[in-house]
Length: 111
Image 1 (tube, rainbow, N blue to C red):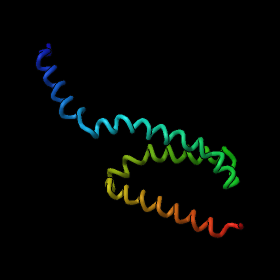
Image 2: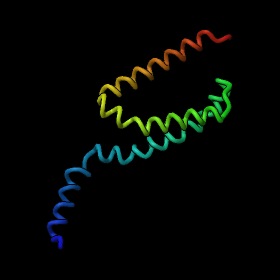
Image 3: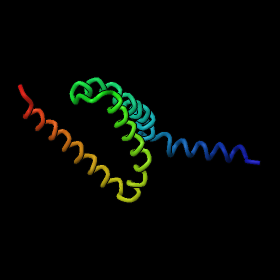
Image 4: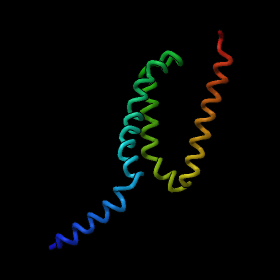
């Protein structure tokens, strides 16, 4: 049988050392908001992507589904193999290049 006093001491220690930190509070608040944005934004952007690219909703939905599947299946293994900083650097470079390519495409569009 577990001693109730010892159990309460462990719970109190864990609360004071881990739960009462600013990062725990920040991730508890913004984590669900972040995951909600990840799941809602593709649906909100589908109409704009449809108009801009000429693709139908099935193609866009399939691309989003494939992206989610690959990210969920391969993400942990890639981070374990390469490291977090390399993944963050690659994500930053990919985002930067995407923005630059978009600007170049806009420059060549007909007025």
